[in-house]
Image (spheres, rainbow, N blue to C red):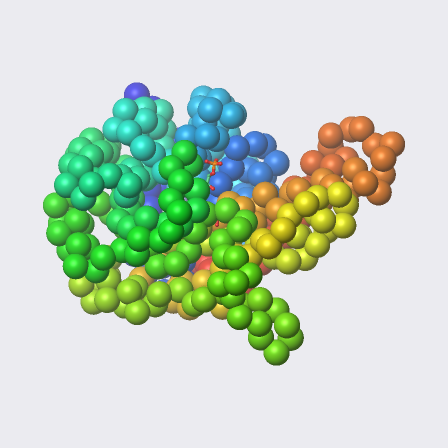
Length: 330
Ligand code: G3H
Ligand code: 13P
Ligand code: ZN
């Protein structure tokens, strides 16, 4: 048994409390390699932002669970070396079984998500409660989910949104004992969140997707005041990255994300954690494609992974400063 406390990590409880009071959201950035981890930590140290390092089960399979845990431990030391200690949470993203959550808790994670959102309600309650009972023995915080996001959730594919039902939230959080709740109000995973047909054009001709369902969020906030809410699928899909990718041989079509003003508004509400993965993938891919296309004789991975890391850092600094409002809160 390795406790996250020995690794210098923190759970999310205190961070969410402050985020709720301060009207901002903690960034949850996914990582599965060294450059991503460096970019996340250096961006958050430089902007003085608390951060949640997220590991999906796919990331665990890709990078090896032991290496990822040591990387998170290394991240704590790396932040110190960079000159400022920020609170760092190591979080399991979209855990789908009790065994996976238990394994992460036993190996140094400070927070886990148990995603039973695709299960019948009573099964979601039972599974989530079981994870909470185990996690709380070790002071590990737990995120549950109610409602189904459109798009791809790891291996689970949902064709359309099933928005969170406000009538269920009180029962769910009291019976399970979860520390935070992921909800479905119109966000979705990946870089193709909306079709152009679902969008309208503004005066500049830019496609604007339908707004998030803030009415549902408000109803949820009324039922469980002060309870930390999580938004998954919150990439904005910056069009400058899509253009660079396509300019240098990529083929991304109709990539549309959540406008940043919608996320800014959400961050000021009970939404305390905002998940961003796809934007980072786009930033890295754009940088790598540009180097490989413009410097075809280059074959040292540092020459394209380095610029990818720089671009990622820039993106994450922008998110903490201008979108989530977490900069300066560490
Ligand atoms: O919500 C899913 C995250 O973006 C992680 O994606 O399962 O491909 O690692 P992944
Ligand atoms: P995006 O695909 O919008 O980045 O969402 C990531 C996410 O929700 C990870 O759990
Ligand atoms: Zn997610």
